[in-house]
Length: 181
Image 1 (cartoon, rainbow, N blue to C red):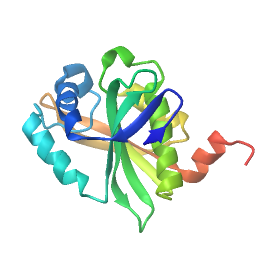
Image 2 (tube, one colour):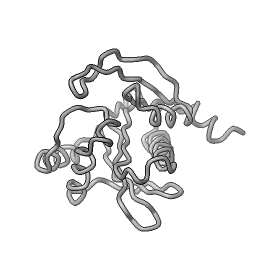
Image 3 (cartoon, rainbow, N blue to C red):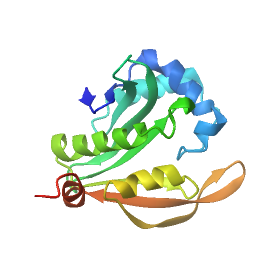
Image 4 (cartoon, rainbow, N blue to C red):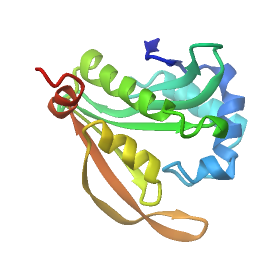
């Protein structure tokens, strides 16, 4: 389990499949995600989770509120590259009523701390639809830098959309979190 101030991240389990599918199939949530295979089924998601559970190159989590254990989203680290010390992160607050309350920022910070402290990575990157201003802002706030734009990278509702590539380096994150170091 990964602890933060108001949330904790625990490994995703089969019992989480139904709610993850609900979130992934919600139109508002889907707009924030960086994949386009919709709709998502419980059967396919369960198969994906079973396969992912044995993959040492990824860690998938459910985001829960500390105050009541309510599940509010999902996140993770994937494409873990221990040779080049980098990985890709993803995150979605699935419960729309919790958007804009700081849980995304808190979750991303916890993922970065886990990646840099536990996995000893040097770089964590993520890609976001260019209109996903909240996710871009979260990454920049935590020391991320935009590395570029992947032009017409993903098709969403029949339209090719650009994706913004952002990375956070361990040293930049450390300076931001602990400015006295």
